[in-house]
Length: 58
Image (tube, rainbow, N blue to C red; front, side):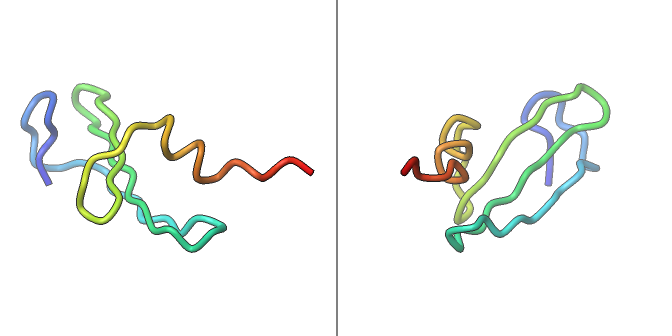
């Protein structure tokens, strides 16, 4: 994986399975501090990730 911000090859990747079963990957660049999320190989916004993990209000 390459950082979209600075192009460095070594980035941190964390695979997560959300409570609803959705699988997402979090990436972070140690060089430029760029952070991003992917779902099914496509980039998603942090706002979308937060919506996926938000508990329904009763």
